[in-house]
Amino acid sequence: MGLQIDLHAKLKEYFGFDSFKGNQEEIIKNVLAGNNTFVLMPTGGGKSLCYQLPALILDGTAIVISPLIALMKNQVDAMRSFSASEGVAHFMNSSLSKSDILSVKEDVLSGKTKLLYVAPESLTKESNVEFLRKVRISFFAVDEAHCISEWGHDFRTEYRKIRPIVEQIGKAPIIALTATATPKVQHDIQKNLDMLDAQVFKSSFNRSNLYYEVRPKTDPAKDIIKFIKNNEGKSGIIYCLSRKKVEELTELLCVNGIKAASYHAGMDAAARSSNQDKFLMEEVNVIVATIAFGMGIDKPDVRFVIHYDIPKSLEGYYQETGRAGRDGGEGYCLTFYSYKDIQKLEKFMQGKPIAEQEIGKQLLMETVSYAETSLCRRKVLLHYFGENYDEENCGACDNCLYPKKEFEGKEFLIDALNA
Ligand code: ADP
Ligand code: MG
Image (cartoon, rainbow, N blue to C red; front, side):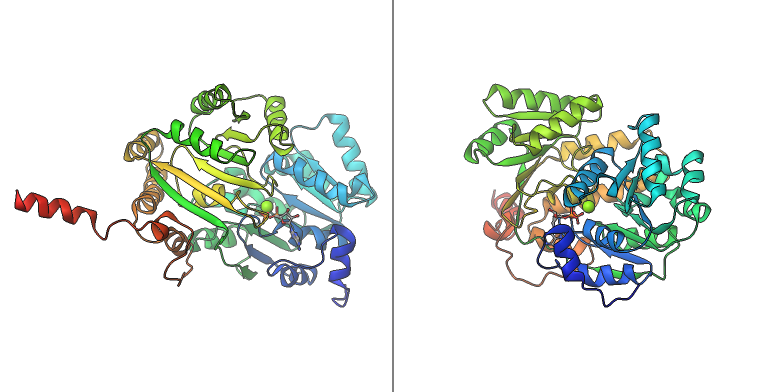
């Protein structure tokens, strides 16, 4: 495959875009050259294109491993909308019937299919491995690759089996992509996928259009209703820790005349997907959800992300807030924090294996220091991803706009000394 092909023309032809975002072009060239590739790019940066475009150009079928059924459907629909052929993209997961699977396999074997999205659970199935051995594979793409690492915010054991399965199916280059970029997670992924040799492409993780605020959790429901009423017609996501809270809050919002719907893993698939569609189609403005919602869902104009409960890790926080403002427009990220919630989260961990508890606690403590800091939140967040942020004042977080008094405790101390 010569690299002299006109990538800009292909970009325009297949996706209708005029230019590449960030370092997409270099990444794509690396994939086309048949190298292993590791992509660290924030949410909304445009990771999908980094494997979609090469998949369309190269001979054979690219196998895309991706964790969520909702995410796959979303991406396959998007790919089809760009293409004249329905068969250009398919997915294989537990939602398909036997006859669906047969027609997918037929398309793949006929060479029509350039992208085959596979859930990790399906990839490890013997019958699918047998099938994939017959397929001419251009490369493997491992999306949301942080799922491999226990230090990531969404560890999935199935992801650990990817490498051995790739060996069984037949070796091909791998492109791994994630928006989680702590050095620990990065190393874990590369080691586990046996791609320490990969070319690494790391973009800045700063999302300058996002505003970060952490508020004490005194009367969060009241604050949320007020916030939404002040932002009428805008789309937003509210994350809660428990399914029960999701349902309660949805109801409360609806009672207050706000168009809201729930999303959590306890609902059946049809109800979940219908509520997701309502949100995407803007029949509702607000989706109240557990962290089951959002990975890879492409709604570019989400204007706010509210955390009713503090997330378990800064990684999770970054990912979830990252769903705001993907179109580059404003995104308001509001988190409610109370130390009691931290204690609750610690309690949840108690039944788990010791090693897991240790990791969990460490991640939690990093969240606490973010929530309690009086430094620029952007600086703290980026520091967590190993990135220096040098601006004196970011102009878009509560601590920069409304600095806390130098050292609030000092006044207490002086009062106490004078008493
Ligand atoms: P990520 O997976 O990194 O979170 P996506 O691949 O979902 O990001 O892309 C985010 C958005 O950016 C999508 O709406 C996508 O269509 C858009 N996008 C990607 N590449 C380009 C480009 N070169 N020009 C314009 N829009 C792009
Ligand atoms: Mg993505």
